[in-house]
Image 1 (cartoon, rainbow, N blue to C red):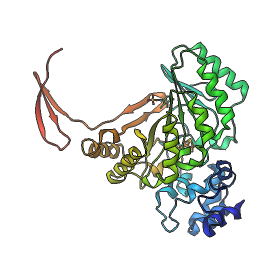
Image 2 (cartoon, helix red, strand yellow; image 1 turned 135 degrees about the vertical axis):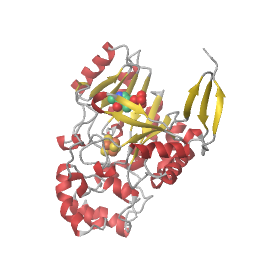
Image 3 (cartoon, protein in one colour; image 1 turned 120 degrees about the vertical axis):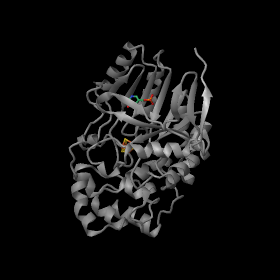
Image 4 (cartoon, rainbow, N blue to C red; image 1 turned 90 degrees about the vertical axis):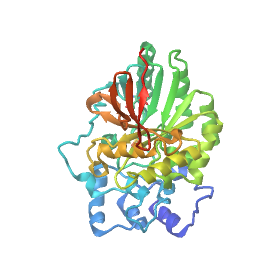
Amino acid sequence: MGTEVKELLLERDEPPGSLNWNSWRWQLRNAVRNAETLEKIIPLNSEQKQSLSKVIAKYPLAITPYYLSLIDRNNPQDAVRMQCVPSAEEMKLYFEMHDDPLGEEDDSVLPGLIHRYPDRVLLVLTNMCPVYCRHCTRKRQWCKGNWISRPKELENTYRYIEMHTEIRDVILSGGDPLILSTAMLEGVLSRLRQIRHVEIVRIGTRCPVVLPQRIDAELVAMLKKYRPLWVNTHFNHPNEITKESARAADMMLCAGLALNNQSVLLKGINDSVEIMTRLCQRLLGIGVRPYYLFQCDPVSGTAHFRTSVEKGIEIIRAMRGFTSGLCVPTFVVDGLKGQGKVPLAPNYLVSKEDNYMLLEGYEGKRFKYYNPED
Ligand SMILES: *Cc1c(COP(=O)(O)O)cnc(C)c1O
Ligand code: SF4
């Protein structure tokens, strides 16, 4: 397998666009999962080479040939590379960082079922992903060996959701749920659809970004039957918007699925007004609405990706008003220990007095605004 990937990327025996390249199963089978293969494809300095095996032993490696092909091999700071190539920084321990800072394990009512908010649940069907993002909030789960929910566990999940009639939104998350076979996914969706009070189902997936080949005619024909379905994806950088990802998005749009994006604010990758604006504009261009921009959680092994919280607010301030409102995501910090998402926005309300407010426009000019009483 190793040499195949090497040939692929260096000698183009299997050029992008060929039959095999376009098969998602081939992409998964040929994902780079060990240090030796990665070293042959991506130039690493001796320090990086030395730490690679150790990092991978703690936080496994997986990169699809497609995602690898987006990397500029000559740029150590490449935005795609930094998201998927392990770094020695992941081994550093910090007092403020935890394996599970959001308290997901505590909010799990069953294995893989997180019920934190009143009317929605998050259902983790597997811990596997086509690419392991180095900034992943759930990287604690990678070392537990690959797993997929068993039928018996799923039955318990369905029973829980059936009993809790307040649940009107089920979010399939991961791991990446689209790594499952179309048949298994259909089993889950059809079963959830039988529950009267489940109004919508969402699928959180990074496949459109890292394995767009997964979005094929068979999959979208199946998904189409279970609308309303909301697909949340995870683009972080404009370089991830390619012909292939645009095609994947278009196929889902044509099947009547709604597409939203959740980005993570990542130091040195997308923490600038210019890059974030370009990303969000291009997302709209392929029919994907920017939904959330997340502050990177204090998860062990991700400290080097974290920016200040102010950075996110600053980026939103520089976007709002200056470009299409549809482009502007909500910046959120996920609260520790199950406190939930906290939206943080620039403050445009300067002061209040009697029946007047002093507001600040997007260009920074202040003006008085008459504020009627209720
Ligand atoms: C983010 C999240 C949700 C969904 O939140 P929305 O704001 O509705 O998108 C649901 N459950 C958990 C545990 C979450 O982390
Ligand atoms: S696709 Fe999502 S769940 Fe999977 S590694 Fe990346 S961030 Fe984590």
